[in-house]
Amino acid sequence: MCESEMTKYRHTDPNWETGNAKRDQPRICPVSGKKMYANEGEAKTTAAHRMSDKESARMQLRTYKCLYCGAWHLTRKEA
Ligand SMILES: [Zn+2]
Image (cartoon, rainbow, N blue to C red; front, side, top):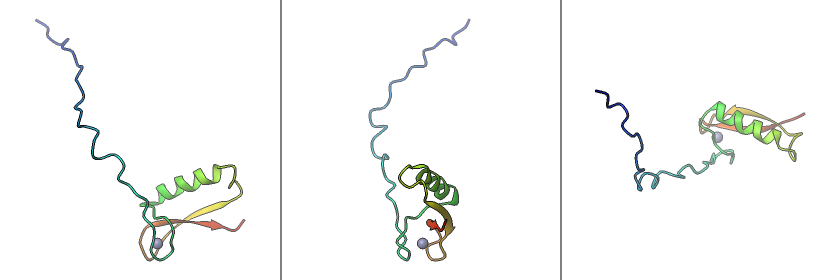
């Protein structure tokens, strides 16, 4: 007897997607006025995206950890 062919289809709960969609507003450092990144990787990813943008292709960004808020910021690096 084999009953392993039960259908795996399940209807999605209609309430499943409500509530927890967009909750991450960018936080701004009160001292530097820069956008706060939770970790270095996130800051670097954003920096890479910005530097790959044509309009700001010449802009060099580096990441640093803020002494005041403890988050990571991006700052422009002199070429
Ligand atoms: Zn800061």
